[in-house]
Amino acid sequence: MNLIPIEIDSIRIGYPLPCDLVGKDGVLLAKKSFVIRSKEDLIMFNSRNEGLFIDGLDAEALHKAYIDQLQTMMRNDKSIGEIADSKLMVDKAVKRTVEANDRVDWRDLQVQANYVLRDPQNESFLDRLEHVHQILVKESQRNPNGALFALIQLSATETEMYSATHSMLVSVMCGLAAREVLNWPEPVDMILRKAALTMNVSMTELQDRLTAQKRPADAFQQAQIDGHAQKSVEILQSVGITDATWLDAVAAHHAEAPGSLRSKTPAQRLARLIQRADMFAARLSPRLTRPPVSPAMAMQACYFDENKQVDEAGAALIKAVGIYQPGAFVKLASEEVAVVVRRGANTSTPRVAVVLNRNGMPTAEHAVRDTGHKDYRVVASVPHSEVKVHITMDRMLPLTQTAPTDRLW
Image 1 (cartoon, helix red, strand yellow):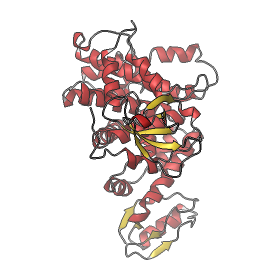
Image 2 (tube, rainbow, N blue to C red; image 1 turned 60 degrees about the vertical axis):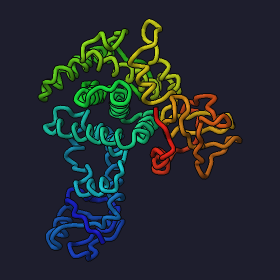
Image 3 (cartoon, one colour; image 1 turned 120 degrees about the horizontal axis):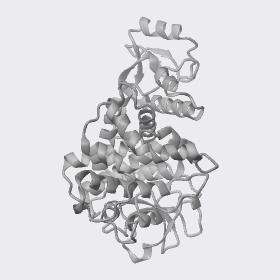
Image 4 (tube, rainbow, N blue to C red; image 1 turned 45 degrees about the horizontal axis):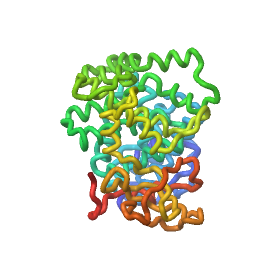
């Protein structure tokens, strides 16, 4: 048994334990589903047994329980202070176990990013922001297909933490375009990613509210939207951000500035790439006031600039993530519907996993197709809202790993 120590604040009083609780020597203290009724009982357990421990194999169950509780609190409109005080964030021991398994829980990262961006005045804001940023950088370099798949799926299916998910997707897309297509140096890439992640820090809560709002933004909300770029800059300055390129990119990330990237200042280049990715990602997300569009249609919108000319930044994004991005649904010449799992030999020939057979029935096994083959070529992009099948992230993410025979442009 691989024992992992946990903090007593990680145990939820009055809720069934998600796994067995043991002492330092492995002796069972409380079985899974046992309910600890008071903090005093928990303190007694802890002091009598020189700490509280779980089996390393149970770390994921404990981790999931915390994430479920955090999401419940957010759905119930609990304040950031209440969430912070509850100390339900995953404890360090569990985090180390998850990271050791080389797996990222994207829903957990979604919760963490939401927690960070909703509370920029928190004294640990910069540390927490850096933590989220580093995970995104690591995953987009280790498995860019998986990062795109997870974030595009979450963006298209979930609205409760829209703003954080949106910012993470824009950050990853911009980073891939900067590194793989534009060949920008790493320091520029890092500032770009952080600017994208923090572009909406002044209106995270408002963005989330607007996705569930049945009416268009009112005058007060529209004023907040119109002023959010400068307000985000002011917040970043107040917490100690002094990098002029970062701040100027955030300030200009909604500017309509067509033209070659070479003709722009460094900050303007970053802002233009963010603006194009922001436009793409916003069109993916469902809102009560408008339906989402297919990823292919969203990408087409960012490909052409305000003058109906090919946009250099938009073209770089398409080359980086593909016309059909991981996480998007497509219809094949075989009449099957599939979800894109990996970028392919060029922007229009991704690898896909079949989710509906030619009769429209969900598939038990997800056969992987090479759309570069004429029998499986993509014939149409399919909006997420039209695919009535549940995508299990844990089953799909292994398929996003690049195979030895895959060729990326």
